[in-house]
Length: 247
Image 1: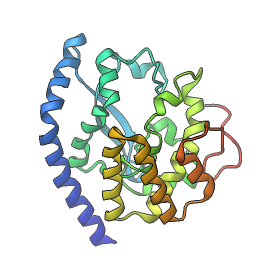
Image 2: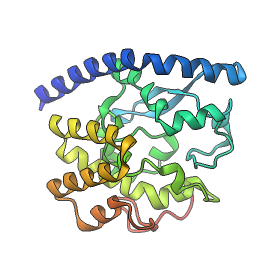
Image 3: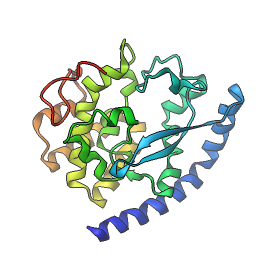
Image 4: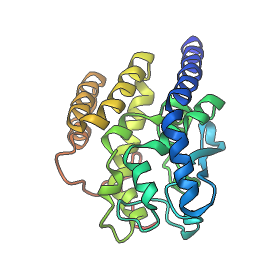
């Protein structure tokens, strides 16, 4: 296990360094475009909870208006008025996640692992969900591919934070826990490939996720939800018996 962690960290360092260099011809013009739209910092430094419950500062390309986080709303819908014109381009092509390669290089994050959450969301974790904090958070994982359209799911919601906890969190957490139980370098490589494939063909990426879930022995309900062919219904998070009713 220790050797696997060392190898994973070495791969994270190499891949993130190369990724930042390769992505720079795209990232630099976008950084300039974000600055030119309002002459404020093109970066949004967000507090997230990492391994062991330790907070860290995650670097993102700013896709929203200045001080958007002060509204008290953590979940973002596709129709969120706080998203800037350049921000919509950034979100469409996941460029805000590319900038997180810096956090991977620093060691706050890994390329693959459960997505880091804001402190307010982590405070709602059940005892079972606390296991999500046993590994470094990642740029991508199974849930990132399944719920890549999170903004569209919440676009007509009157309370995005509540609906996130009722519709998305129950399955996102379960997929994250499944990854932790079966994590391996080969699985990481497959998820990185499927993340890239999802940009070209979401259907094929979701099909690949189904193969992985079959191999990992996921239950039928989780596999059905991960197909994303049906509307999401409220469901309790892992370790709870009741659906979240308030934030």
